[in-house]
Amino acid sequence: MKLLMFKFSPVKLLAIICGLFILLEACEKKPAAEATVKPSFEIIQDKILNVSCALSGCHASTADASYTQHGLVLIPGKSYANLVGVMAKNAAAANLGLKRVDPKNPNNSFLMHKIACETGHHSSSANFGAHMPLGGNFLSQGEVDFIQKWIINGASATDGSVNESLLDNKNPCQPQIEPLAPPPAGTGFQLKINPFDIPANFEREVFIRKNTPNTQAAYVNRIQLKGMSNSHHLVVYGFRNSLLLPTENVLRDLRNSNGTINAENIQNHIFMGGGSDVNSDFTLPPGVALKIDPATPLDLNAHYFNKTSYTLKGENYVNFYTIPAGTVQQLAKTLDLNNLEISIPAGQRKTFTKTFNFNQTTRVVVLTSHFHKLGEKFIIKISGGARNGEIIYTNTDWEHPVFTSYSTPIVLQAGEGLTSEVTYFNNTAKTVNFGLTSEDEMNIIFGYYY
Image (cartoon, rainbow, N blue to C red; front, side):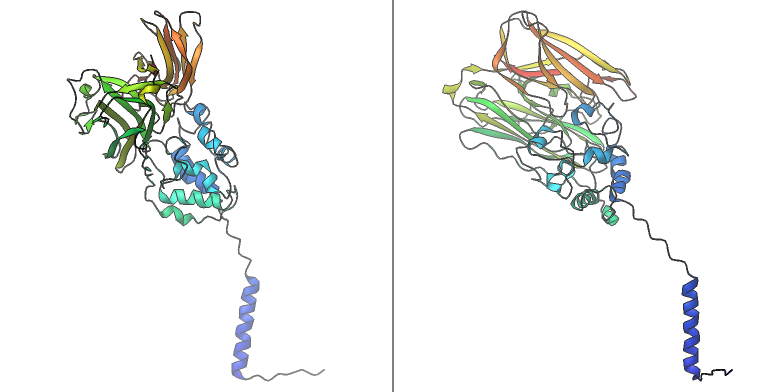
């Protein structure tokens, strides 16, 4: 038997030995485990929804006081099915065909319209309600970008293609108001509250007296409002006593510097228009109008709450649309019927009823309501007469209450009236009473009659 011998140079022999070592090391190594990619929606749930949305009183359960308005629970295990491919409950969004989340289409996703920073992100005529999260605790720019990219990528429950580094952009995504165009010349006029600061972790309510610009009697048939996000209400008031007017064009605060209430700001008011929904547009029945005398002093009252650690801005517009004097058949007056006797114990659901009777024949042409975030249902009934107990108004949305206009007036004889029947669910740990802040409650019938 012959032994085969190979002759190699020292350099070649060294190369062969090194190669063998490398080969043996590679054979001994086990294949590395593939890295696990966290689904993008799981990141959204953990870092955004759980922190800012799925909170008690907001989107935590069907027991939340606000649930009847939005019908949306965003807790783990429920949020994805409640968002993706589901039609928006908001009436204006539903009319436009928006889904809560429309995969690959952020412009048709109602969620983006509720959290986006940019102006003009939806039709200016659409009332989509307040910016979310409610109260000014806005998402960061990075959080908004992450959600938008997730939708663009298909809004999958399992895909992890969105780069988590987007969340590093912590700049607040504060929305900006798109200016409201004034009525065309000859059809009305506009009043405005110019931008003002709402300090961090503060609730600010302001008033400013404006004189209307009309030089002859004007007959207002339509009032249009527009305001910034995290606004609690915008109300337009007239004055009972024209000798006790505040200085024109000077911004006044409801609260004094020591936190006490300046009652002088509210004792001389007569309700003129507006309410909880600062982005509303309502019209009186044909031929019915409010008469506005030349240079009428009006008080614009805006209420904002800021739960962030940075300063926000408030800004509001009011458009008054007029009709020719010759088309006016009835001059409207305003209803402002308050029930101050409300106290809701912690953790309880409670209904309060109060009747307001009239001492002369009254023809009601518009009804709306005002309560705060614990309010579940606001019912108005007729009191007395042949229609006693008949429900003529129902609202379940404190944020943008129903304005009901009656082309055939509701006629109430002397001694008859309206009954408010209002149900609240107090999901807090304290008793909530009537009060002026967003953490208190109210119970008011607003409307118009002649």
